Length: 484
Image (cartoon, rainbow, N blue to C red; front, side, top):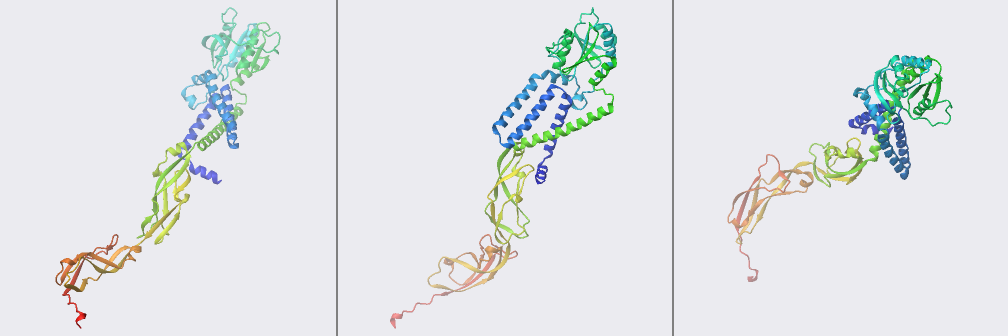
């Protein structure tokens, strides 16, 4: 459950849209190509991909590589071998049917009219061969043929197979409610189990049914019998209603229509769910297999700092993060999207050591954290205080040898400084600016500015000058001890 929660939290809206679009495309391919050879090859490719994932999970390197090559070759086979079938599916549908509609909802074939016409031909001992194409394209298996495009009527069918008609020996291809081609030549069957009395017409019927999903009906010129072939099955039809039922089932018309449409609805729902699960599996395997590593330099951000607390020093201001994720996600990540946060809510005055973990790192969804460098950061924190310290004159130079500085008074004698506690606690004196002794020859008063060491400053409202009053006296003569 935790893995599922992490997976769901890492999804972006782009990922959801990506899965939804490709799931719908796969579902539409099922609707368009169901029942065709192309669809069966596509199912085979899906099975190969499934076994490839198992091989990768088990660590079978050569097996997974081999299946991957077979899958790529199978994709080329679909395009090259079944190009006519693919083209026919898209050519016979408008854009709405391809994207949204039901391509099976084509014009209904008038099977009752066809069945009546064929049994009239049977009664008259007139041979006939009629092809009802399925989902597969028949361009490569049917030869010759004259384009007809005539709307089906009983009279038209009887006229086409009239003995003196030039095209009566060929097959008729019916699509929807129209005769598409007449005078077509069908491939002959080479089966050894066909009845000996079968002639060319019946062998052509069996030959086309064997290599396609078409339903083929033949009327014998000798016996007048009506025979239907689909796949490898061949069975005679005795009554017109039986032929009507067979052709209606071929058209998808069931006597229990409600049951049929319910089954169709459930199949489509199942196909939609399976399409979604398959694309999700492909997306997960693809994103995991395409993990990429990058390294980002991210500045540290401090939060919950108490009022007055200041950061004096840190061992690192930039943290180097090694991140991993899918190539598409990694390429979209910038340093601005990644944050390193340190909580100073419990920081104390002095040195604080923080261990960096994933809890301190904020990452975009789908990105994983691999390494943090450095793994810890030392932060020196301090607070500003005000302290009163003594003032001292910074004398420089040398007083004349005949004079001495007997007394010095400072106004004020002490001042208040502001600064960080660790620095100010060590400060006991503040000096004035340099005062030159060489220029003093008599008592007097000098105003000098205070010069506290940076970053210490005078407290607010305090003057930066001090009055120095000094008394200078003549140096007393030295007493010669040797005269006594």
